[in-house]
Length: 219
Image (tube, rainbow, N blue to C red):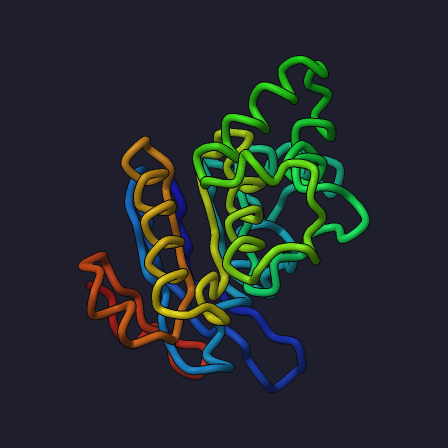
């Protein structure tokens, strides 16, 4: 599903954010990407979604080398990838259901299908009663659940989550992990970046460890 071969990423000439990354993520797997702040976790996720371009190496997503992808093709690649951010990145002037509907609007789904799928995914995360609310009217945990609903509404093959529980308490963190676990059991490949040691210990998923831009563990 995701393959990386000798991938380097440098923001400055003599400073690699990622160095010689070799990684293979199987379809349907759940992988925890771990390491301290500055280890390169976010950069690695950004390479997979073409938010950043690798300095060197090959990155294959679904068999396609995205390092060489044309800029005009990136939106099509992202149709199959859901993204969850630590800081939610919701549109505060749009309602919850409007936020969740956005990915479907972008790809031109019918209004009937958008309404149906958005409501169903909000029901899945337990927020169907808040569809007319705005993000700032919700708690942090609820906002993160909206962000997950938005990431899942288009049934993505891959879901990338960057510290999705970083600002949440234990109860909300467990709720978020349960939502991601359910998505994984339905076939979505999940890659979750975290530095939360408790989360790593409590969930027995494959762990890929990063430090100073290098993979130091992979098992």
